[in-house]
Length: 244
Image (cartoon, rainbow, N blue to C red; front, side):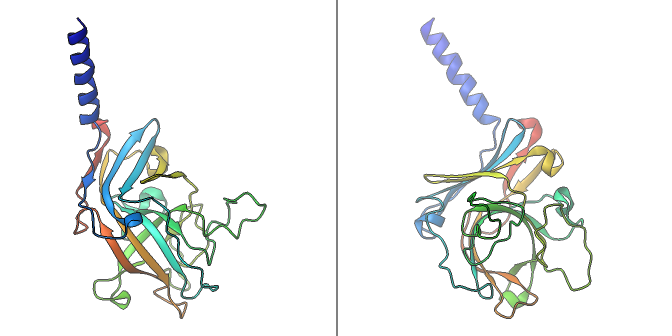
């Protein structure tokens, strides 16, 4: 009886895991430990999707060095590029690659509606890790095959999310719950916030971005890619609602 019960519990546990996204496993040694990806996945937890990256070191332990100015400021990030359409979170449709990002940048604050450190000020929290949706597009001025956060040209009036922070780029500051615990970086995204998708593909990236010293298009380029879960940004991870 005990043996049968143990076998049943093991089988149920195996089946439960099988219905979750297995994610993308990556080899160690491609970047410094805090950004060296070993596993990336998306899974459902209640009414939320949890975007998770596991690294070889302590997640979030490395922060950019403050430069004292917006121009030339660095941004460190854990990024989940997805196949979701940009319109699913409130941008124009088919605007580029929609990516969820966990970022830190001590030289500026781009979450004007949030007071993350609870000091009564909403403009001094940029160094704390926080969430963004960004739309990425190719731009050779960011380097060969370079990517940037898509710019908003002067006078243009694209569709933007309600929590757009006012910067002239396709960025959203949704204020999602997040955690940096040991080797895990996680962001919890309400399913309603992405339009209850039936499924989508994803990848994992750790990278640095940089504000253009001239403060013009392109404003925010991906300056260094430290690690890519798939190795080639092919978005092999797959989350599907009916498999949860």
